[in-house]
Length: 420
View 1 (tube, helix red, strand yellow):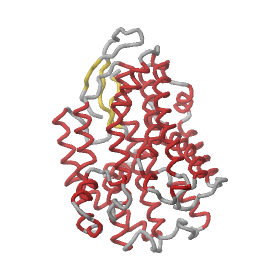
View 2 (tube, one colour):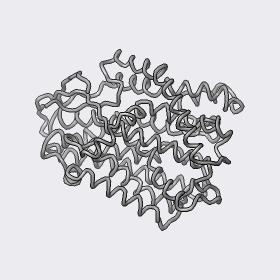
View 3 (tube, helix red, strand yellow):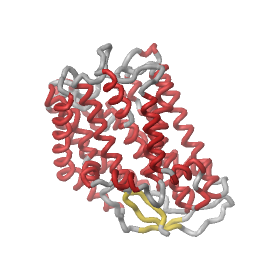
View 4 (tube, one colour):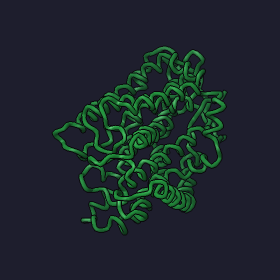
């Protein structure tokens, strides 16, 4: 847990200023643990795709094993998005509800660049000089990749960087979050007490999810054909970031006041292990989806995405909610998520995410046509882990040390909490 403490103030519903709240940055070890599991799940599903375990383009997968594998791992990237939503929005929520210091936008931008930029640029340079060199058509092609905007044009993602389309979603969210926070805070200002403010903030968050759902419907229209470029555009993925934002609201409200804990979140706080059990049941039932698509990596139909996305959002919420509750954690959850090897994987997980696709290419020669799933998975996990360790200690960690230039911050994914 970091020790830097600050204070601030905000106006309540009547326009008077409450006593400033003091905050400190706290490291949520359980969130680091689930981050590690999510990245391992990303690597698992992509390795399974390469080794032919998952169905693709009419080619069947490996029976019910493919279905289980796809349904269990499909929430991996959504979990990573939701973690960003939670960790980054929570300071803004505490500023609204508890008079905590408002995040300094210069520090916020500086830290986001240092967190994701250097490791990503290292990957981009290596891929543009190796696997993707024949795709380079000019300076603009390279610049588009370096500023993480390669998702907006078909064919602009270099070989070896296929999974980095998600970086455009993250960067757009970073840019829009202060605007969302300001708008939602103004709307919440008229409510009385943390619970009332939380309900109003959740209205704004729900609107983001609804817009994302509508865009997902558009990007899966049959007229656009399979795998349209719009399918990777950020707005369709904002629903998962909204899940994290909603959890930030619920967590901050519960921390601000005993009366601020809303009923569904109170139930989760009391039954954290049972919440995970419910998530497991939903995933199992999801294996028997009536709209199809389970066990494959095909582009979903309109019916599939309309049916699947609300269930995906629910599963992500159920998996993450127990890890965001202030106070005591379920012994099982704490023991599982704070396991030391898992914590270290979480520390270097960003590098593993970036480098696992190149490892597939280096091992298999392409993203498809491989065999022997266990061996493929072992090689890709080991290779991406080693690359991530090098990236973390030679690039990421030195970059993170520069964050102190605009205020103290831990290297770990910490977030402000109130000082009691």
